[in-house]
Image 1 (cartoon, rainbow, N blue to C red):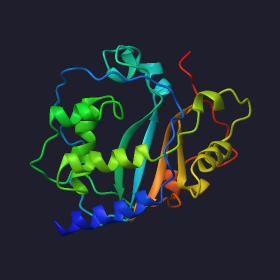
Image 2 (image 1 turned 30 degrees about the vertical axis):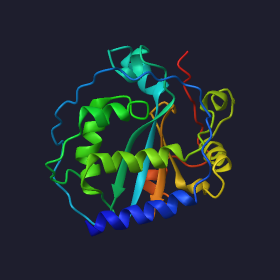
Image 3 (image 1 turned 60 degrees about the vertical axis):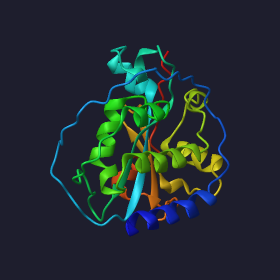
Length: 235
């Protein structure tokens, strides 16, 4: 309980320092009337290590859906909206590793999953992120997703559609555009993940234990600033 109280105080201080959010991408989202939450199974061992920071991973939907197609997934099928950057997960970090699959009796409820669908448009993804990552941070899924929503909604997201049209876009330019949109955010706190062909898959935003932007380590930072970046617009 004391750990959670401390976490809330740290988050409150961090949020007070965040820029005022602004809509940067006009994507639509309609939440289904009913949802189900699948059972997830661990894909690795339980690992309990001290938390040294956090990563907010934002997945670029057009690239994710390019290979998946319209397979009945809310993120990709187009029936409930069209998505740009969505939250893949909020991940606790450790020193040289990360905590995962901490045992918990708490499961994600359909009501909570539905509340988060415009941010994370997959109940399976939500269930997995809570069980694998969130349970190592806080005692309840509602707390995990509340923290995630506050961080996500406090960001000014760069217009990736517009950036995709720049012929010589690099990883450094993308980091600088994000930093310029979020005053006080250092460019080296913006991690980037590209696929093997150089197309953007994710932004990985690095935070310290106080939920303040922090320099990414090499594992999360991704490609060097001079690396060419291509962004698929879903056309």
